[in-house]
Length: 474
Image 1 (spheres, rainbow, N blue to C red):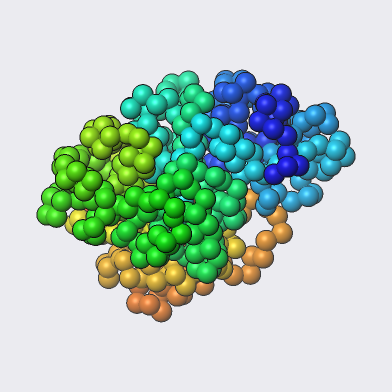
Image 2 (cartoon, rainbow, N blue to C red):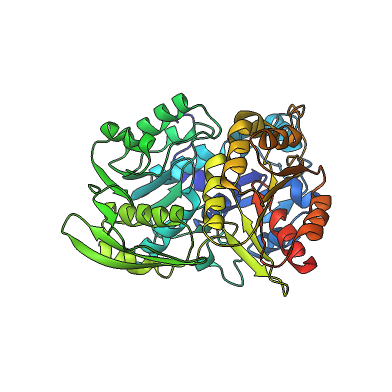
């Protein structure tokens, strides 16, 4: 990291974000601006007229937005923030190279902010990071710790009229709560005071690579918080210097659930949390459905305990947690009784958690899935197919459009039709319709009262608009 400026030097330089509207870029830009830095940016989606309300909100907050044509890069002092996936032919990168500008990845910049905070709390794992980050951030906020929160999703508790895309909160110099990403290996950059590990399962990297990355993450954490219900995560416990374990099923975890206390509903649930440090029990009310969200709540409570918040305070705060946009987000129910749900599910574990939550209650499931890229589809296509085939019943159906594609040189030879064929091979009911618009028409033609339609996918903010338009059409 020595080639980068110090924290103080960073804030004195102007920043330019290439892809400022991205789920990882936008909150980081908001935190920098909140700390007093000058921040501008561009985004291909803005140029294409996608999600105009997001960019209007950014401009109203004082961000200078430019077309993605290089015109925003005007000085050698500017720091270009661009993901590693941004190609050298993108105009901002070309212009930055001509000017001799410093280029940083999102993770490099975030890690400097995180590591120089008073107490960095990092949430890692294949699935659930954004939800736990939101929960833990809200607990720290409710406990009066004035945290900075860096999330990849909009946190409903913090949404205001002038800040509708609240995926970041700028707090004091102490607690810094952030999800950290293993998909690009950048989790290795962070040095957490508290490191939370939710689970270890196949996503962008092989299991062998993930075990090393997450094991090293625990070893670097002052206190590790580990999900004992996940065998792969628990196996990494010996790597931790000091640990707090949590789990629904394990009786020896420090933070757990009283057996038989879970009351599950279609949109909320309740349970009794036990703190095995002192044997105290705390009634928990959670305004989110699904066993995975109960596990997420335990992770947030355990993480808060590691950061010095009493269990009772953490449990009380969780009751006020309103959830995240696009995480089992119920858009509404039509007059005919068809419910539409917007969800971020895009890897096997996330999709399975959502589908299991749906299948715990009556009604057919129509699962629409838009893959978030050709590369991920190649990496985990078989596992995705198995998830949809095995989690859904004989009356349910999976409908897939082509993967999201915003340009570039990625190999597009293997697409959604291969996954649909694999689902059918596994005994599931599935259909491939290349166009998302045509998928919407198909759903309208087959949906009937009592159905739940779930819209799943990542890296495309227009999926929420699609879900809302579908509800209106139904």
